[in-house]
Length: 314
Image (cartoon, rainbow, N blue to C red):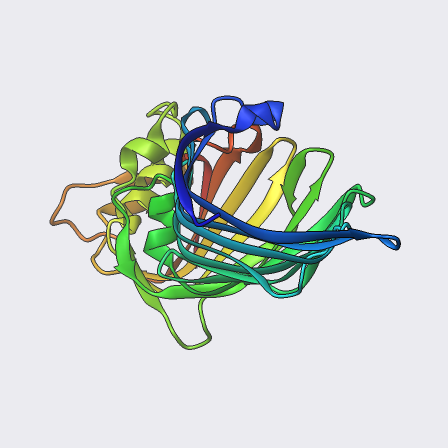
């Protein structure tokens, strides 16, 4: 059968968890079966092209899916090696990925071997090496390797929509998958040694939400928000860990604001206090630590939220 178009295939018929998820595209099939005294033998090649997966309820979509699956030794449920899954664009909540390329093999009805995968995200590459997925393994770790991701693009994808700047980060984020949950364990991204960058974020409303103006924390947050308006960093780190049902992404930066900050330090109270613009303020290297908290049980369609902020002045 040459590839023929189909529309709005309801995937909930095959898996209840995919209720209200749909697949469009063109499906083709060629195969052969032979039955003799020795039994049944055959082969099958399945082709899906120009596919689109749409799951509006979960804010998931994949565009221009292309899959070619060769099963050379039916009824043995084992595919040929180096099968391909390609797609142009995928979205998961506010996260957007492009140019996905997965090389894989069906080993048996209980095991799939991912030979390698790569996708473009946040201006850089995200990839995995060999991974075996098996129904006989309750928990497994998927190491995600990140290469030269643009820091401001990462923040924008985590709903810090006004972030701009220059500079990239690389590193490794292990995902622990099991019992229907995903956990982040000691993931890290960091700028290359000797290569700093800049970041600009208008973050005052986001940082100060729910903080009383007469509290010591408000002065620190006000100070940090002013620094983030235009900050030149020598190095930056992003740390990823799960806490309960949440993902916490901690951003650590060491550097200097591009302008003098209109604050002074009150030695008697130990508080930072805003002063009039034009007065002599603080103009020295500082370190900023900011935590972004993401509820993993609402991973799709989440809203980036800054949960806590600390700043350390050297």
